[in-house]
Amino acid sequence: MAETKPPGLQITIIGAGIAGLGAAIALKKHPAIDVQIYERAAELQEIGASIALGPNGMRTLERLGVNNALDESVAFRNKSGFPMIYRHYQTNEVVSVDTHRGHVDPLHHTARFYRAHLQQALLKHVDLAQIHLSKSFRSVAARNSEGKLIITFHDGTTATTDILLGADGIRSRVRTFLVPTSATAWTGWVAFRSVFPISHVAHISGLPDEATHFWGPNGRTLFTSPLGKDLFTVVASHQSDPSAADAPYSDAVWDEDGDVSVFREFYQDWSPLAQAIVAATPHTSVYPNAAARGLDTWVLSLPGDSKGGRVTLAGDAAHAHGGAFAAGGSLALDDAWAFAAAVMHVFPPGSARKPTEEDVGFALRLYEATRKKHTDKVIRAVHEGNGEKVAKALRETETDEALRERMKSRGDPAWIHEHDVLGEFQRALGELKGENDAVKVVDVVVVGGEQVML
Ligand SMILES: Cc1cc2nc3c(=O)[nH]c(=O)nc-3n(C[C@H](O)[C@H](O)[C@H](O)COP(=O)(O)OP(=O)(O)OC[C@H]3O[C@@H](n4cnc5c(N)ncnc54)[C@H](O)[C@@H]3O)c2cc1C
Image (cartoon, rainbow, N blue to C red):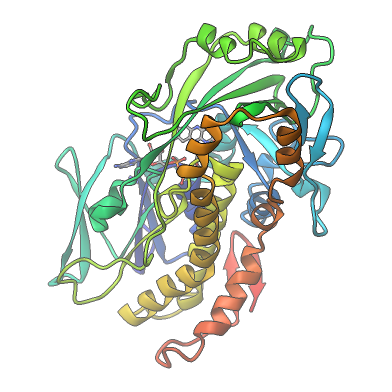
């Protein structure tokens, strides 16, 4: 067991993914906050393929002191400085590019990681004794006599806490336990993801040496990118109408082995370059995409809990937007930072008194006010692109002219990838100041070693 810090505040995190580890790192400098992480997996394996972080996530990694993840040995950034390059599926010509909009330090340029590299980099900043494996969250209840929450795991063991942070991913059990109507639904989109040594494709003439999205008709895409440590990633996509009775992959399981020959067939009428890349891809795994509508509130209370809302969510658990915009990793890191900043706002390091229930309630509202508006906007954008819009696009044959127009007129994702979480935190603080006079508003927050002046 981890060494328990002096009596103060107990925070329990469910899930040792990017959000959960990020929150633990952001809180670790606090001498009186005891953080414990409970993870369902029996070991922290290298599962997953590539994951992108935009400037927002990269800035937050630096703010948290996770500089090892910014290193070019694990973070691959496009040399051109364009976060993404869009190529035509048959001619390979560059039809469009994403650009960084605001002033973005090159260190914070959009990067692609092998997910396991990012997770390992985060784990280096967490005391492993804080992470309890094979602990699958089952339920939580308020024990008013002790003033604590009691968490029960599937193995029958329990843990007590003052605050519960559900960071247990897109199918969050914490979320569906507290908000049973918040289950996700399949969007009809399936990603076929592969990561392998670059030597498999290095012989291919014209192989893109930057993160590149090839777009074809009717939503078919092929993403390729070098990754750190001489790895390469290929992500193929298959879109079907999720409401169709015969939709393929409707029963696919996350991270199950995919059939490379099926995946190669998707690209039969694509350019020789695209076909050479998929022919050289040695294996693939299947990732069905799911999403859910935004929650009404992130400050969750248990029935009969006299202390009010003491449960909240972070990462995909809080906003089940699926893989859209490749934004999940950065949103999770920004959530983690904002959660810690809000808690430290009511309970700064060195504070002589334990936060009251009003303080905790204020912290969770401050966290929600910092993050929910932005992530709700992301979720709305996701749902606008799903449903009937997808079904209609699949029914019609897209002309080359229409494809090119779609590539050029796609939305600019900079509002997601360059979102300023610190600015939002300051805005939210201004909005909530005075809401509760009992809460002493401090003007300095220390998160991950950085002093944030408010
Ligand atoms: C194994 C895995 C592989 C992934 N691979 C990719 C990828 O290749 N590319 C990509 O873009 N995104 C991938 N993702 C999703 C991506 O990590 C998230 O979208 C994003 O990083 C947000 O992180 P998160 O911490 O909110 O969620 P996640 O990264 O999903 O982490 C959630 C954590 O909670 C744990 N958990 C779930 N249920 C319980 C429970 N009941 N009790 C205790 N713990 C629980 C999970 O095991 C996991 O460790 C993957 C996620 C996982 C879990």
